[in-house]
Amino acid sequence: MENQTKFKDFELVGFLIYENYNPLLFTVFFVIYLLTLIGNMLIIMVIYYNTNLHTPMYFFITNLSCIEIWYVSTTTPKLLIMLLTKNKKISFYWCFAQLYMFHSLGIAECNLLAVMSIDRFVAICKPLRYNVIMSTRVSRDLCLMCWISGFLLALIPMTLTSQVPFCEKFYVNHYFCDLAPILSLACSDITVTITINRLVGGCVATVNLVIVVFMYMNIIYSIIKIKTNTGRRKAFSTCSSHLTVVTLFYGASWTVYASPKTSNSVEYDKLIALVYAMYTPFLNPIIYSLRNQEVILGLKKSIQGIKRHIRGG
Image (cartoon, rainbow, N blue to C red):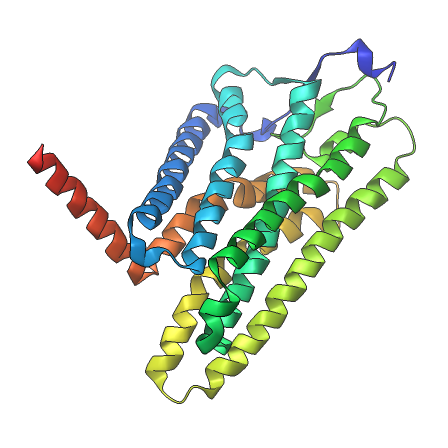
């Protein structure tokens, strides 16, 4: 702690090899960030103002959009500031606040994706009991559990990492404060900290992934038993969007956090981190709207309502 009182800031390294393209990167990331906010807010508004979308599935999608808005806003604004002003400093407390929010929202999203797979399982495998099993109260309790568990579990790696002694160099080789880049600055044995952090992240990811895989095994088995092609297509269409999001989220996360590390993997991890930290929140509204006729119809009704309101005004 004595070493930690000698400094007030970390310095984020960012994308050093692409520094000559900062104006272009700023433009691209700013547009993606803006479209992400607009897209997810639009999903929330369409679902809120269309009563026919007030079902558990769309309630979970609303929560996912809320998480994505927070998630992308945890890292992107600082990245944009770095690209625009080249000010890469971040205070000790803001760094760990960013780390905590990023991982708490990541765990919450991981939990929510598992809950959404349970919802699809009940809808397809137990359709007659769907409204009873996935009642409004159950849906709210499941979402609350996702949020609370995310913010509680993220306290463990954040607290342990904040107690690590850092010596002299405070350059975080990333574009945001993540566990591995920060722990690489430690000047003492941190085997216990790394082990506990991996156990927390590994248990969360594994348990939720097992739930998703188990639910989809049952869903696929139920879809195979459907006799008509129309019925199969309809059943599969209700799951395809969620399955696409799960694949993007777990694929990128697994590549960064679970793949073997090499001397060249740090720069590669930064690029892959963009997938789940920026591009997945950007793609989610597109995936859930363009591949969902109910959302498209709800969006059209909302636009028509706005037009009527303007004309009436």
